[in-house]
Image (cartoon, rainbow, N blue to C red; front, side, top):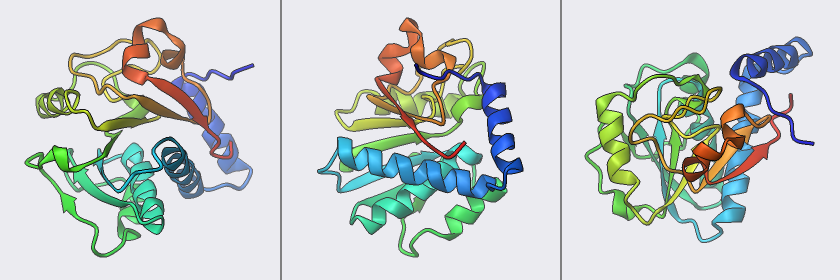
Length: 203
């Protein structure tokens, strides 16, 4: 039977894991490692991808992914779309990236050079409308033939209600961390979530 947790229930589960002795940094490491290995199984021909990161911990998960993929000879560029003032955990993992990792802070990139793109902008905390620059970015990326992955939930979907903002990221594969969230199992979100795979992060 599949476990489905709301955003608040997931936060409580993470805090319970921390109370048992696991750090939030380790949970992020587990999430990023699990997603990286899952991506390699789905896309074994992966060579060069783009991690689209916000400033919070969802972006931090993608930074872990980038480091792990690099060890498998898969290059990952980083695009910070909400500025470079990151959460503490994300900054820690930015500091752990290989020194030659290309990092961008604007969307003026040739997206056709990538064979996969990972959405790690807002994650489960999103509600309302997308910032205009994010909406325009996703409108462009959603038209590409590139393989598209989302971490936890495609940016633009309210995790608990399943409400979908215009130009929400359209993932072909979504890596749900720890458990399914309500939006993962709603019919109206399937065209944006694609195939949903739960990644065990140790909670």
